[in-house]
Amino acid sequence: MRKRLMRAVEAKEKFKIFILIPLEPGFPGGILDSAGTTYRAIMHWQFQTLSRGGSSLVEGVKACGGNPEDYISVCGLRTYGYLSSNGKPTTSQVYVHSKVMIVDDTAAIIGSPNINDRSLLGERDSEIALLLEYGTSRQIRVNGQFHSISEFVHSLRIRLMSEHLGLLGRETDGLLEDPTSDAFFYDTWCKTAQENEKLYLQAFSGIANSTIFTKAALKAQSPSEFPKPLPGASEYLQRIRGHLVGYPLAFMKYEDLRPSLVSSEYFVGSSLFT
Image (cartoon, rainbow, N blue to C red):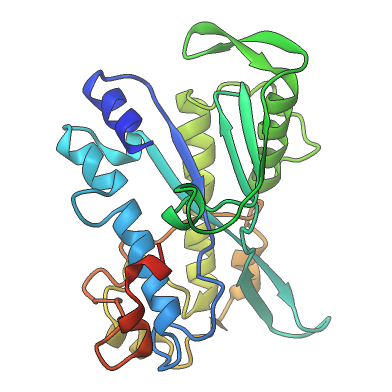
């Protein structure tokens, strides 16, 4: 995917990658927790893949002279609720556990593999997946040109994006047909993710975000690491649309999240986490 992305940047193609991943690893502990070594290690390797280091997607785009925000959207899902009818609001991520890849509305892969070496090298974890690429087809206009798509794969993408954006069941006048269009990519998808993220940060303290670069900064904001409602939280939450939020690519950028020498995880090597 990185090689294809870099080719697109060098050729100045209109090319978009939509990535949705968990906002936090599904492991015990946290950034500040002494028991969170595996949690932090997984975050380290995710950041190395996405935005940090010369082999990351973001750095690859920059090396080719492109703006990563024109090619890549990295998001997660978040929701909120109330502990009782008159209770305080609370929030948590919607953990993205589905392994789905949709390519150009022509093919979809749905199965158990993660996008990592453990799943994809073929010599480590056992996996199974289903490739969907046939069925009823039709033409749609993408980036000014007609493009042949699979009706099922197309409808799957439309439904997922509609749900994430809070548009499921609403009339969209074909807005989601072309995900490369400026009206959709910048003005709908990215804008919704940014606005929802901002509203959550106005409603709660202690949410990982791209303004917190160190453990000390996180501890100063929320020593318990659990989001706490701020004054006026309910007013901000009422304005949230769907579940889409931006992924905090700059979170902890000044910290080394790899296992320390005194941890047992240090001695198993990086292959356990990648």
